[in-house]
Amino acid sequence: MQINASITHRGITIHEHDVPGARFSWTHEETGSAGIARTAEEAIRQISGFFGPDPACRLCQGHGTEDWALLAYASCANCFPEDAA
Image (cartoon, rainbow, N blue to C red; front, top):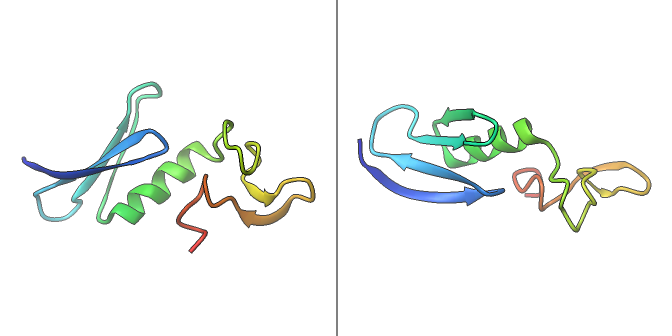
């Protein structure tokens, strides 16, 4: 299996493999979690869904919403880039 390319989301490397089907995989060594996906966007959604908001995020302060003081639900563009589109 050959790795074609890789991207990083929230410190986790997503590898693209040269195989049919689930072409993308990711592994988080500290928690022992991993996933496979058909697209890179699906892998990013898996990582964001598994880990939730980033506690070190400067935009949302780890709450996962843009307006964390009012807790209005507009996903943080840094923690959940797939929702910001």
